[in-house]
Picture 1 (cartoon, one colour):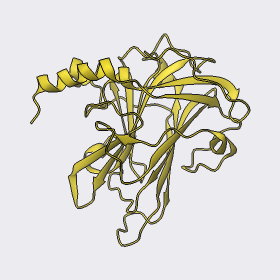
Picture 2 (cartoon, one colour):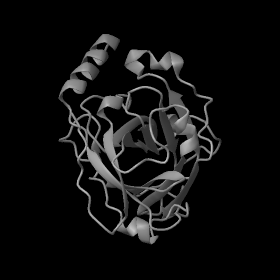
Picture 3 (tube, one colour):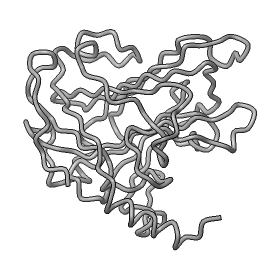
Length: 262
């Protein structure tokens, strides 16, 4: 079993050698309806992220595909995800229950000002059971002691669509999709130097993670993430993806990623 010091050493090493992923996030062309579907014109025009991979070992290929899209407007930052899964299941319905401890879930971590502190975590399962935390520091820097588990992302909206039959293991499913709208107000209090809504060229740090569990053994989870960070931790904000905002309406132009990433 890895000691705390060995874990901290691996995190320090990862900070030195991992190059985070990048994404250009365009303005939505129309008001986004948060219904769990990715059928609106803006979602169809938005680009997919790369397929998620194993959080720690890039040579390990996940059994089922996961990919995401992002958009923004004057009121919300939007994340949509498409997750293949032949058996979609979930149990937690109460807000701020430990979804991540019992169910497969999708998680989003956002650090708008990129300072590695006061970042926000959101997670949800396939029946839209959600939780949210505010973390003032990463865990290897004492974040566990200062984590605000009672903090709520006010104004947040989320929805799920299951392509199949929920909690019916005898029926093969295609998977599930989700859309989350992150309200700026809760972010603004924790990132006073960032712009809300973002301005053209602004860059946030964002991390996307899928935790998959076997229904027969929920204590063994697999983390598939937008970016392989080389260590089993979602709490290394310096390695979160770089999301560059563009004021161009999605589908009208292709903007290169230009921000400094190292």
